[in-house]
Amino acid sequence: MTESSNMTERGEPSVEILGVTKRFDEVVAVDNVDLAIEDGEFFAMLGPSGCGKTTTLRMIAGLEFPTEGRLKIFGDEVGNLPPNQRPVNTVFQSYALFPHMNVQDNVSFGLRMNGVDKKEAARSADELIELVQLGGLGNRKPSQLSGGQQQRVALARALVNKPKVLLLDEPLGALDLKLRQEMQTELKTLQQEFGVSFVFVTHDQEEALTMSDRIAVMNEGRLLQVGSAEELYERPANRFVADFIGETNLLDATVADGDMIILANGTRLKAPNPHATGTKVAMSLRPESIEIGRPESIPSDYQATSLRGVIATSSYLGHSILYGVKVDSTNLNVRSGAVAAHQRFVPGDEVAVWWDRTSDWVVPDDEPVAVTSEAS
Image 1 (cartoon, rainbow, N blue to C red):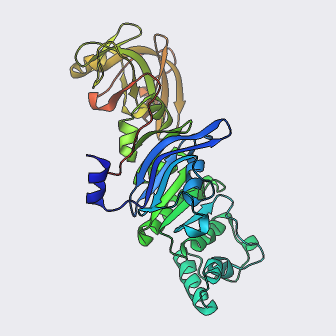
Image 2 (image 1 turned 180 degrees about the vertical axis):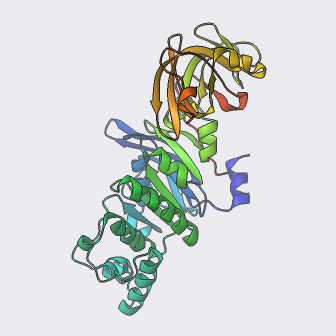
């Protein structure tokens, strides 16, 4: 399906990034990115530090301008417009609240700057304050609030002007783990209630997987894959995405005939394979997808997707046990459900590992190619 026909079915995208490149002197921060974000979508931009995700967000916000390419918001060209002329608002990690103003004044500030009557601005602010679960705290100053409460004030202030797109730049990065997890749920709920597009930048895979309808993975300024959490986790497009999203084992191999691959040690394994014979690939195996047992316990149906090795390490994690299994020169991580002590393996034990063919995925072992995204 082409992007244009897809958009006809889905409606106009909230954000379109068309062949956008951003250079800072000799550094290419964003490299020829094409991306379409649907109206009402919770969209995450994920990648390591310096991958270009924040620069892309800042270009949507109008805080940076493209060196090349075009930006549209609901069909309108905005690439050269200043921030105050774009129907977007941004929530930063630092919150950027006015310390001398109370909660209500912080939230209503944007409305008052836009000429809204003071009484009406206060009423709208109070509605948002209630919505973000800060009822009764309207008279407090930011210094009298916890980090999570300050985050909610920043969200309310960004939403009170009813932007068409809300941009969030690592907004949960300053919170502790428990509060961050709570805010993930609240953010998703807020997005669904408002029905506007959220574009969320993060380097945290769990955040992206938990909240997003779709995720864009970036590295070195390039867009490598766009898809749902399930698509990225189970069917990564390349080695970088497989390794970056969650935890996986990557086994170097060469494509043989049919649906077979050959590992470096000569072992032939069955694997789903769209690649040409002779192609260098890597098989991605998630630790939780691998079964482990004694060498003689491999089920007959799994002989073609099994390996033998020796337990190198064993880590008890309460809900599971993480084994390091040495297979020739390769170390496989295998996550097994917690079992009784007498059923566990210890370093030095000879074992076999096997997996269902639907659990592995083969990716090309070469330089990942940037993609053109279409909303789906």
